[in-house]
Length: 554
Image (tube, rainbow, N blue to C red; front, top):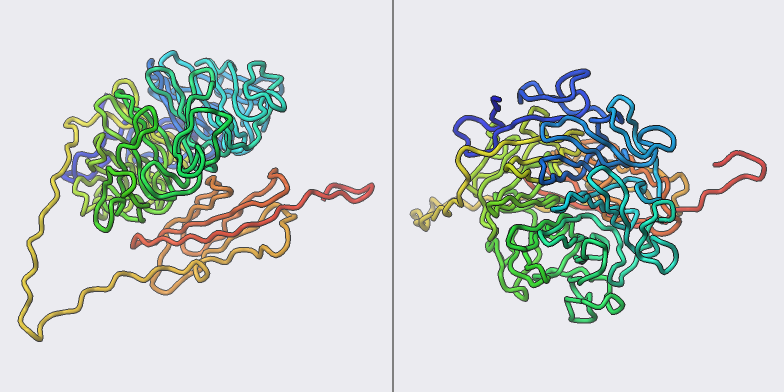
């Protein structure tokens, strides 16, 4: 079968676009597209093969593809070519039917808490193991669920999932959503999940700023992150002695760990969307290295000594990550590492196992009309696009057993598959620029100043936090500023992405329906065409729903 290049001629190695699937991606009623220029963004859909903001993708040894269809509250399974096989979640096959195998009969799932069901705005991440089991992380459900490859529920774990004080549940109807907790085996905002060759399960806990490792049955093994074992102790192996991690920027510390992956050598890779970097550990949680802009100091993009590492800063060149950009992560059999950069349209970056930049691809990453980049200094942030090979907020990435690359194209509501390139990318040696010779006196021109930082108070109009939010919904407006053109913005609630918005002036509704009474942290990060980003954050209180006596629900 012929494939179509997702990059411009002569623009670098890139990844050959193979196909995309989702509702209407090939035109009305056409769910698969193989000609890049003819492909469209997917429409929101609830039948089998349709998506509503897919946020994670995984493959198994047979080449099947699993997708966390987040806002449809279900998991979907496809063969390697995108043909629909199965969906599971509460009522996906109709009332009381938790699985569906006929695409036209499937529907968006209902929110649920029993085994095999998913919390609101979940599932968030999906992974498989060598035995074909499927693991699903639920950010708002505070638990991990394990299934067979046919979607049959096996077990769940997290604080109180089997009832008060019971951390494992194996009977679906007896399971509950997990409570947030900080001891070993307890979870708070699990964002990413991965497995290794031995069957161990790794969980990136965004709200707890730590990584946890379990065996395949959900038995706690260890946790790592700042102070997880007590003040100054970054590792914990006794569940009852563990703590929530604290936000930190040294090597082996985290802020909002997003994605987690392993390689064939047992190394563990973690992306941190708030620290603009990726980190590599051994299977015991020992820090090996970090990469991202300035992680080793000004102008130094790698760090191998934990105590010397720093938080990364937003950047758009190859090997750098911009606002909310370091999302899903995956590895291939060659040891290469792929990171989905979700912000500002987005791109996918490829590294070797030491963090050396190999290439990036996505719309305009090599300049206008150039879809790939192999020279780090020449790379740019991706632009939003809809033809095959272009993205709009890619957040999930996976590799298949034959080397194919799969991307969860979140805002385009589709999955994209890329073939193996004819010539593998190799690290590009840095270009050494000779020192500049000072011109004669009187002819020197002043250096062009760097763009000034953007003020959050001037960029955003956030609702007041003086009173509790009783409507359970409100809008954030992005203001039009002189000399600034925003290309995208990401809205998060309690660290979880809930909206991706675009254009210079737009309102972004953030739905608080279903959240418990209490404090809710809302943040918005907007990215401009010149790579600058700005984040506004505000904490709100949600109100309990009230009823008038004898009257309707307010």
